[in-house]
Image (cartoon, rainbow, N blue to C red; front, top):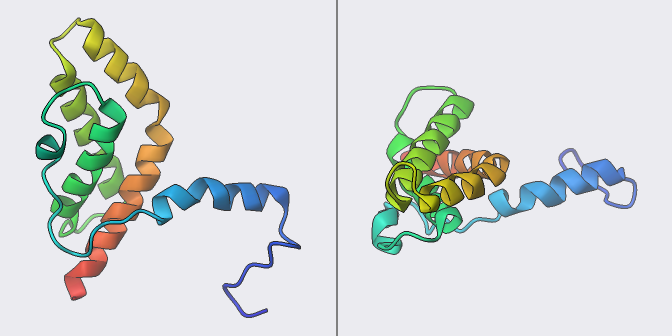
Length: 129
C-alpha cells in the first residue's frame, strides 16, 4: 500500500464512518471554476432553507476565494453569512417561517461547515488556473 491509500478491510469502523460522513462535502459538484449562480436566483421563493443554504455556500465561497485568511476562518464566515441571509429571507422577525428555518439550518450546521470548507478549497484552487 502506498502513502495516501486506505485499505478499507483493515480500517477501523470509526475511520470508515468518518470517510462516509465526509463524502457529501468532498463529492460536491462545483461546476468548474465559473462563478456559481446567485442562490436567490436558484431559489427565488422562501421555503427550502437547507437547499438555500447549500446554494448560498457555493456563492459565498466563490466570493471568499481571494481572502488571505485560514481556510477554517473563511469557511466559518461563509456559513455565518449564509445562515443569516437565509433566515432573513425566510420571513419577518418572530414569524413561524423564520423560526422553522432557523431550526432546520441549525440541524445541519456541521454539514454546512464541511460543505463550505470544500467549496472554499475548490474555488481557491481555481485561482491558479
